[in-house]
Amino acid sequence: MLNKQIIIHSELKGKGDLVKTLYMIKEFKTLNVAYENGTNISNSELVTSDFDSKSRSWYQCARKKKANEYCISNVYENAFPPYDLVFTVSYPIFVNDLLLGVGLTDIRKESIDKGNYVLKFKRYDQKNNAIYLDFELGRVFDLFTLLVPLSILLVFIKLLILNYLYGLKIDGLSGLRRRDTFKEHKVDKRTKAFCFFDLDNFKKINDNYGHDVGDKTIRAFSDCIKTSIRESDVAFRWGGEEFLIILRGNKVSSSDIHSILDRLRYKIESIDLEGIPKFTVSIGFAEYRHGIDIAQCLKNADVALYRAKQAGRNCVMGYQYS
Image 1 (tube, one colour):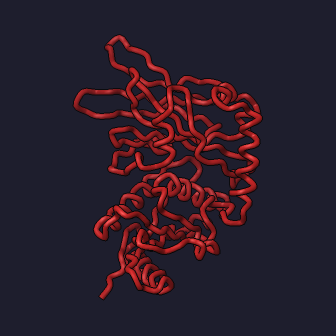
Image 2 (tube, rainbow, N blue to C red):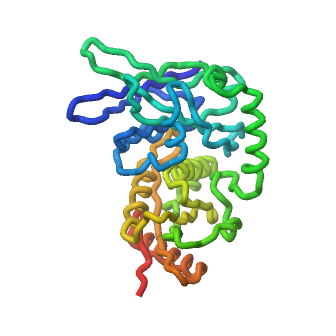
Image 3 (cartoon, rainbow, N blue to C red):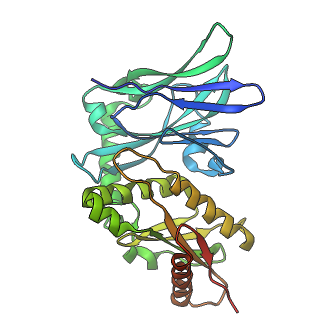
């Protein structure tokens, strides 16, 4: 029997958005909501930032949909038992025909097979005339058959697995690109910085909580990265608890790099999931300048990462060119 989860959204005049989590549903790996006004819920935790969700492909796809329609933005294999498939689904949220934001949810394939339930929004009025958004429990199977017959969906999954998951390009634990695919990515004028991320005191997590929890920590970090970086950026699992992100984009200036990375650092620090301890990351980056050798640029980013650790961890350091 499923536990219930209700997230109540209250529109309080002059106070912005208020989100309160009451329960958890175990059938869902993640639950994220990105509001049009910039407020975000990440795994049921309210976060307010200037993170640009609207530039993400999953957001743009869902905001073009009607109520009860959805987009499938990803399918991947769960890194933990029972190693089932997980769908990443985005869907629009409306109040009085006004787009409030977009929900992003990971749903286990097991939920579809067993005819379990998925979250659907509905609106109702309280006596004080406040408007609330409440999660209505609807059948997963019903949701998916609104637009796509299950047989077509399964064919889509099989093709995606063959071409994406098992193309020997994706790290099985994190779902990010493997280090040996780094040379496949062209460095051009859109490349802005090479950024190393290192999970602080990760060995202590393994030693104190066990490797299963360590794996879950890496998965939580990677899930956060995948939903946070822009479509133009590229993320790799570099080895162990170290990751590389290539920041790309014509609109990214030198002065933007540090603030982008610090927002990411804060979002990672804010992860609060049952079963894993709170953790932080140290980040070191080197700005890419035309003509600089790529190998040297990576070394510079590594130097900056070392300085971030020396500075006490949980911070962002940039390589200072002379």
